[in-house]
Length: 235
Image 1 (tube, helix red, strand yellow):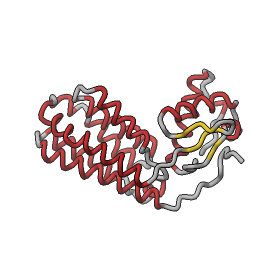
Image 2 (cartoon, one colour):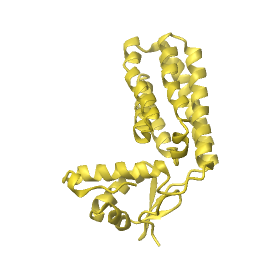
Image 3 (cartoon, rainbow, N blue to C red):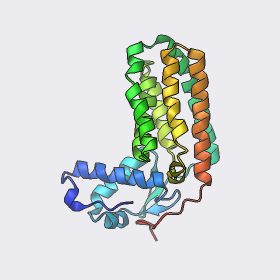
Image 4 (tube, rainbow, N blue to C red):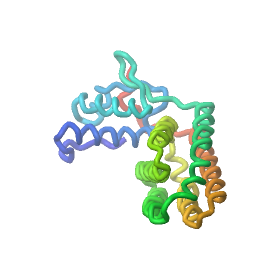
């Protein structure tokens, strides 16, 4: 994880907290912060060269996203996601998203679907540019914005929560081998099918996409991604 330079930081607490949270998410995705490991706010703050308060606040934000969990008097443990969890998250998402994609295909305005094309292209561009944070953020916006066309806010919240709890860890190795690009390109394929009014084809594409994402999780979990250093780990 790169050190935050104090000279470049916005001095407001809220912005500093957001910047720290962004850096921590990047470290989680790269595998530098390891699942199951406990990290202390003071230890991480020392790495950043800042006070512990914005780091602790950023970790609380990540805890609300299900990425870490507080450990009394020690710090925060990076949430571990096992194979059974991933299978269940994928199954629930498929039960919700696949039929909903068919429904949205039949009911959505063409202009609303077309408005998502820049986001789908952003996902592909981020994958090609090896921008993992950008990739996941654009992917989140695409899927949740697409589901929002159903008009069911609770459904969007539910899928958003599932996505947070199944966030991809250790994607660096997959990214370096360009194995995220095929999954990224499926977003454009899905959008094209929906714009063509092919509800059945869109459902099949979404089913394949979720299966593809699940296989990436499995390969990410199996990859031997060793952190360059242990940041702020509690001893």
